[in-house]
Length: 319
Ligand code: AHR
Image (cartoon, rainbow, N blue to C red; front, side):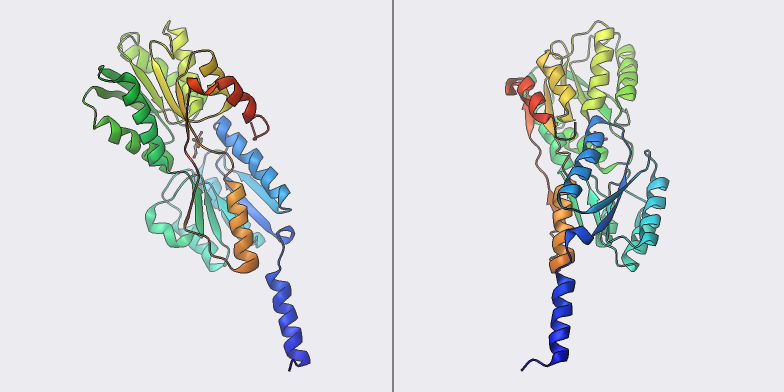
């Protein structure tokens, strides 16, 4: 038979386990706004939190890890229910993530990974397989050029970022299997349009006006949009004389594809927050532990995919 005390205890348990999303406050340490994709990810995160009535506090780190660490410490001091972190680089998180763990605040990584040694310091990571993205880009290029010799220039993402390391690794893995493919220049463009253009200008100069360049591989579309500009200004024809393949699938690359100035992109969804919010809500309300990795899709788009239609369909997705 239920006593008054056991009934009260059962009610309290029921109420605590029914913690609703509306009661949750989550701190999101965002990298900055270096690319169109990043701006869309921030916008989508706000939309997804609003949908679930979660209070999302976003701290923009302006590309600096020290700002991210400060933001995490401030979220811990405020006693938030969870922390989302898009880590600008892969290393240097152990101390601050240990502090979050001691404060019993679960951390979810969004879109980038941290050094494997820190795996026990976060609950789950919502990311794509960035090594696979690089491989998809490489396979497309290998198939497109066939047996022809092809000198490639590469625009890398932010040095030390997991996605830059992995996108390079995945692409290099394919290049290693094809004797006719060769990466002749590779440098960081920090994921920005301006630096992508600047570095591409220097590649063109170093390659005698760019005539020997067969393809450009950029770790994101923004750098490719900058590189396309640089090629056009140098009198080259991107998308025709020089093949392009990049990552993100932002609207501007589809515009370039429609104009015949870009060839291929691998999609990275800007909706990392939706699955992360669902995981945290289930964890907080039902104690469900999510898988360690929630993987998002990596789809290849080429000029044969009706780029203007894709461009239109991207509207409202944070872009
Ligand atoms: O971590 C994801 C990468 O970060 C995107 O591909 C790039 O555009 C952004 O800056």
